[in-house]
Length: 252
Ligand SMILES: C[S@@+](CC[C@H](N)C(=O)[O-])C[C@H]1O[C@@H](n2cnc3c(N)ncnc32)[C@H](O)[C@@H]1O
Image (tube, rainbow, N blue to C red; front, side, top):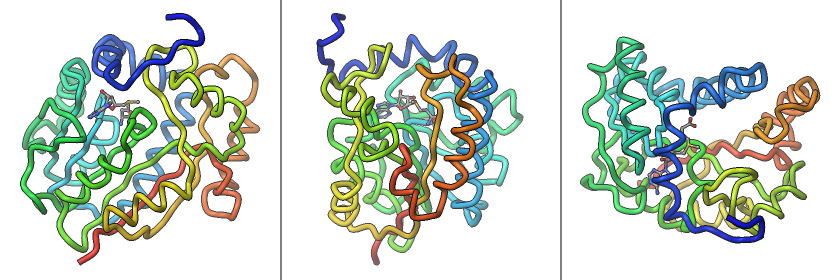
């Protein structure tokens, strides 16, 4: 791939199949990785406190780092991912964590064509997936379709209008993540608000999260990012956070 070439999201499955074997180790084992994982787990814990003993769909679970704590809260999980490699690692991690019996099914498929009946889940989540999608509005409509009216959905997206704007703008020009052959895109919050509304969802809560991009891991930025992350969670500064986590409710 030349530096200026663009790729499409059809690159996602093969990228993640290759990435699956080292995904956890590369992203979450360093000091910065541990900080980002802990911050995201806390957001899940806080926003989804009521998700206990429910039927939950996770789309794009990757290696199951969010499915595991949800399974440990006795939720009955369905995991759908476009990458078979990721689903294999997810299964192994759930077995290791002793909660494989909480999984109803592993499904290979796409967020755009969820093979489930309308209103068949109590909740759904899709985290760190929308920044790899060309059609976020269609994805939101699918997620909204399969949850029950009045139920909640948690997803996040990469915010174009954030502290990381110069890098995000570059990524949007090439549609490629820095140093990785995977489709990547950053969204305008106002446009995401419109898509949430179009999917007949109400935004219940938006929280901001400042991650450390892998490309910045070698720089001593962790303490600055930790401070920025803390003040971006719920203050007005969350508007400028590079990730927005959105808890939405399906209209009745
Ligand atoms: C960055 S990983 C995130 C994994 C996990 N949610 C996490 O945060 O650790 C993105 C995941 O989304 C999956 N994915 C990408 N495009 C998808 C699509 N169109 N439908 C379903 N899954 C998709 C990838 O295979 C990968 O497992």
